[in-house]
Length: 150
Image (cartoon, rainbow, N blue to C red):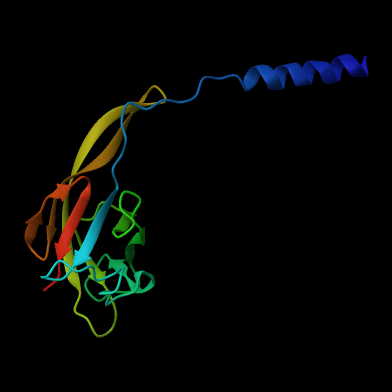
């Protein structure tokens, strides 16, 4: 009897694990990838012309407020000489902090709210509509925004 009871539970566990995977009809875009360059097109984060270290770059939710970080910063996935900002919230304006000696830059993102299906339920998600760097519109090329720092 004990063996039948164990077999019964194994069968129940096996059958309950055969659910089809949850599918979504959208991909939320809550990040951007960007190159930080000077006016001559030299990369300011990576390579021989680098002025800043990736470890010191912060994305702040408010100007000079280091208590509210709005994104994680890492090396780009599309381009290894770019930065990837994974935003925690869909804030309209954020500030890029490099170090104590450099003025912050602003990044403004217009987020679009869309609705899609995920796991057979409606769900809202965000995508990037437009990006401004220091009040100048920037278009992406192959998914990378180029921010020219003056």
